[in-house]
Structures are given as C-alpha cells and as structure tokens.
Length: 93
Image (tube, rainbow, N blue to C red):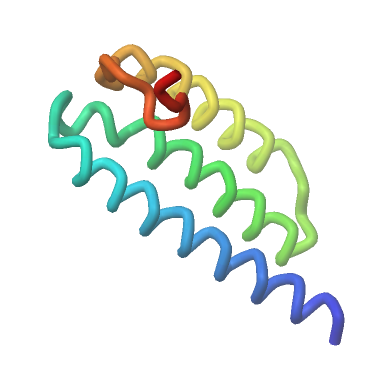
C-alpha cells in the first residue's frame, strides 16, 4: 500500500516539474531553440528509466548504461541553454 502511494507521488511530482519547466521556458522566451530543451528531456529520461527499472526489479547493466548516456547527453546540451541577463532567483537590492 505504501509503495503504491510513493509511486503515485513520484509520478505526480515528475509531471508537475515538467509543466513548471515548460511554463518557465515560455515565460522567458524561446531563446535557444529545441536544443535548449534537450537537457531537461534527458534528465527526465533518467528518472523514467530508473522508475521502469525499479518497477521491473531489474537494476542491471542496461539501466546503468541508459542512465549514464542520458546524464552525459544532459551535460552536453547544457551549453545550449541561454544565459539570462538577470536571474529570477536573485532579488534586487
């Protein structure tokens, strides 16, 4: 029972973060094109691969290799994320 609740909570949190990422990208403009989305997509793919591997109870070499590939792709495509002139997290003093 508790594992089912944890799975549901994890899936809901992934969906919420995806929608927040899309909304934030739209708010700050579509600078950078599709390649700037690939970092988020690959890091969400890591979460999905690990969810599937944990559900199937097979944390073998395939899930490790896919996780490593998606993390490396995510790291590579960070160079296409546009640099904001003003950070939304820093308040003006």
